[in-house]
Length: 394
Image 1 (cartoon, rainbow, N blue to C red):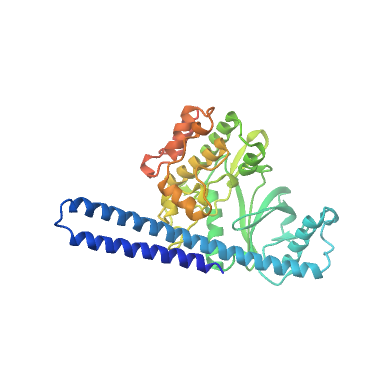
Image 2 (cartoon, rainbow, N blue to C red):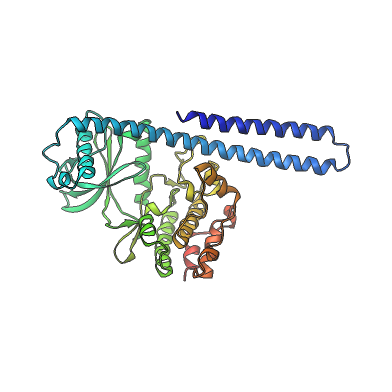
């Protein structure tokens, strides 16, 4: 279903490469003609640019293909679950107010319950379920790239926590997913900062069902803040960014790279308190990453050029993402946009973002300069650290 666009794109690229090789051969045959050396150099430069584009596009296409397959799998699973829930009565342990809230909420809770009772490794849970003989589920908080997050009561410590569990729709490669989940806990535990969510416990409730308990931090994502507030006042932008820099600096000092820094992975609570979350793509700088050959991991709107190309990333890639996040925060939109992830990826690699002050004159010059610097194509031209970025904020 999704294979044809990928095949067509690759065929187009292959045709262009063949044309480039032919042009190079013709230039070689005219090597003795006047101006031939300049023409040959131009052809070689064009061929190198084409090769770079092919390399970039192959990584992006592979990531798109993976994402589409995951979405298709999830859609099929959801359709099956909805069909099951339509013929099964709502279990007694579903809170009455959940059903009374309307079809959307009631259906969601009933679907979770069907999943929890189904004979599978599903991560879906219903209110009242007890996980690992310890965490009593209260309600769903949200879903993310690795699974679902629930509000729960820790009956051992008598405390409110957030519990993250792996979703069944992402268990196609269970070993890799389990490793990624364990890596999230290991990476986050290394980071100690008031601007980073604390990890409490990692365990396996039953075969195929891993959970991660963490600090519960009530609030909204920065993405939701931007959407609801429109242009966020500069004073608040600076406040948010200072805290994000603090958390990111603590992660880098602990040898941890986030690799998916974006507004959706920043929580904003009372009094503008900020917490970084979801180290699911994080990698210790001394360890081996989980990125496979040609696999694109991250979020296109905030990915550094080297990450788009599928290259190894380091702290400088997080700095680029910080610049893209800051741009989105102060301007109300990401630095680059496009009709698809391929277009967005190319933009990160080849285009220069319009300076924030051009779109919003009240952006301080120092902040404008730091965002532009963080979005440099070359990692060596970016700020040396999150601390340097924070220092420019005053």
